[in-house]
Image (tube, rainbow, N blue to C red):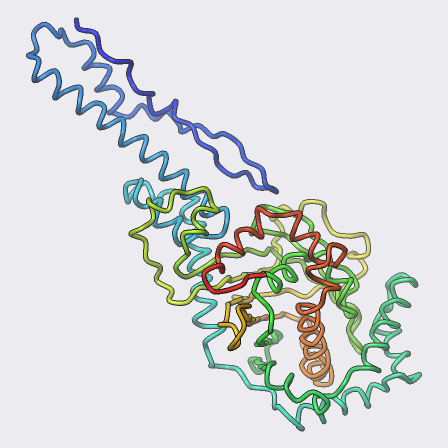
Length: 450
């Protein structure tokens, strides 16, 4: 026989990194040796008596073997790139990349592909039906109507009075005394000093509130839309650093990240103070984030993928944004460290339907290089009770939501929360470059992302 170059690695020997469910972890996975015909045929070919084969034929056959091996290597590289893209939230490009390296039947049969496609389809449906859709929503009146109703709500609840204190105490029945005292004091102080919309009419223009409910149903739907004079990275940081919510939101009794499944996938727990006749309510969520729209080359490089392999990709979404999807924790979900000890005493609500948020960059103001941000949030909440007083709904829409918006708006522009080394969010941003560099890269082509 004739000497031939060492054969390329067989398919089962080709390895690549695949992300493990967890924070910044990865493990080496090996492709299953499926005994494919390509490998068997090559081994048979090496048994040929080369002395009976012409030189030209020998060259042609050997070239075909290595061409097939190169195809397998490219397939592995493509699948590797798809995993890396999906890990940083570029799910649409990951699906496109995987389709290039696998046959249609194999791709359809992949459970990973199915999960990614479902996630991307949910994101598209959320943007189309929930954010941009108008059916079933009633806009909360702006201007004097909203100011007056908010004032009436606080007046009926006796802001700063003994009646308000009594209702707060009743709403927190069953919790520890320390939790009751702290929640009551924080909520009362907030309501007592909450400015009216008349004092800052611009806020009324920047925050738009919608409410929806099917008659007789237990699901209450809330849509909040606001524009912030700060770049998207900061709003994303406020949403991502879930465990800091109690440090800035006076209505939050508890906020915990129970499990970090990946850069863009969390399991969270939250408990909120609510006035009488409700007690504290909590919820547990599985949160997934994806980017949609055409990613800039910097975002692809940040995912450790060669941009040259993606030049022919075109997103089906015209405008770039980050979409955060939330659903209630199911019984079979892994919840990591588990619920806090006080959770057993609290009543739970479920976030249902296609709930979540969209964060989108807006062009800078004239003369500025810094991006602004548009945030839209939709929550469908099953209150787990057939009747919710209208006074409580008005409290959420006209007191709690505007206060939270004001607080976030002020935080995004304050060195107490960003920029300063000892601020609340900046150390978290600096300590997690793998995540926030993705955000910087995603919006870098729009303007100043910091």
